[in-house]
Length: 116
Image 1 (tube, one colour):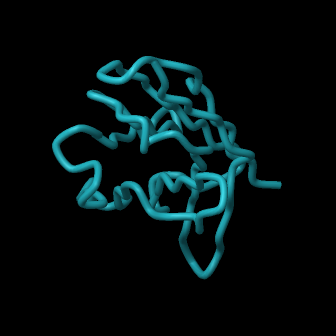
Image 2 (tube, one colour):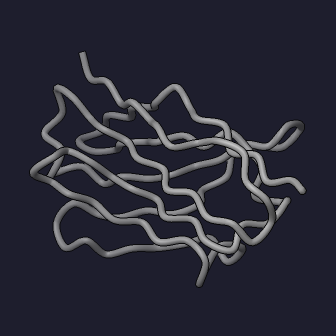
């Protein structure tokens, strides 16, 4: 079965950086669009960034534009989220998500905490 495994979460001070990674297995990775979502306590899960499989086109939530960068390596079945200038409001569980051919897959999530 398809598996998405995130890594790279942790605790950081405001203004710091983290890099999240998600490795996919048993997935025709290059044909799937990949997403990063996040969910803070008491909030709905929200889309942070996306990247398509064909051309690598990216989209970002307004709240992270200019600070976060999504990228992918199809050969390694890897999608990254580079997060710079982190703010306290970025604190959440971050989820990797794959979508294609009517299929949706989620990772287990990784915690990001931004606090002084």
